[in-house]
Length: 275
Image (cartoon, rainbow, N blue to C red; front, side):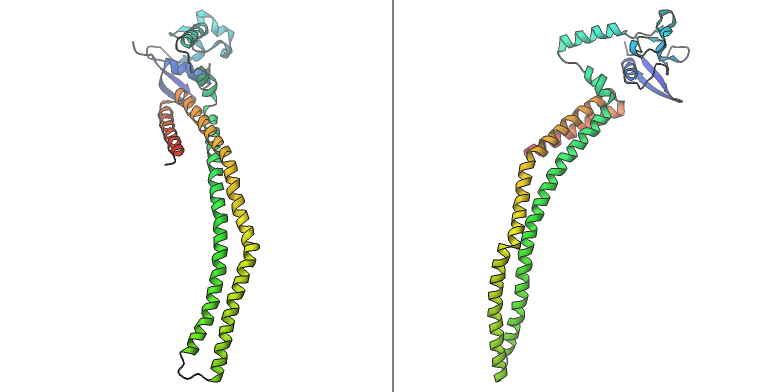
């Protein structure tokens, strides 16, 4: 026998079809209020959900008069006591129940998904930022060394080009010989200044930059386990939220959540294997 098909009204719009279990779950989650209209094929007209016996839990019944059996419609729904009995049997038989998912998780499923997504972004984002910051500090060290070396090479090249120009002259005068000696002295002086400058920078500017780079790398290594814990925790929360939506949401949401769960599982496997 097929599951009865139900329709429900959401404002001025008709929703459905949904199964009897789905309709009852929507009532428990508050998506369908006791005063909202419901209908199934074979009924003469739309009726309030609270008039269907067993559809609205006792704690959600606002009007005591609607609980009277003479004013309710028996549509095959289980009452609260029957539901509790069935759930006890399910727990004792299988050892697992989706009651938490359907009750508490279903009510806040989307908030749980957002929280999990936020934790994943924070964990992975901080880890990625730490890696990039450490690399940037190392690049600054290499850039400072390269700038100093480039400046020296440019100055030395200018002096050497003047020396080469004088040496290429066929007849050198006394003034040319004096200029040549001067340029050679400048070349030697430039070498000494460059060596002194390199030694000074190695003790000051370069040392500071290297210390910052080393500190950034060490800090990232120290904080990386925490970032991984946050990312794993966020993945677990996100997976739980997706499961909640997968069991309590509509058909399109369910399929989307199962697909996202598969993507999340695959990304975690690839992340842990380092591929």
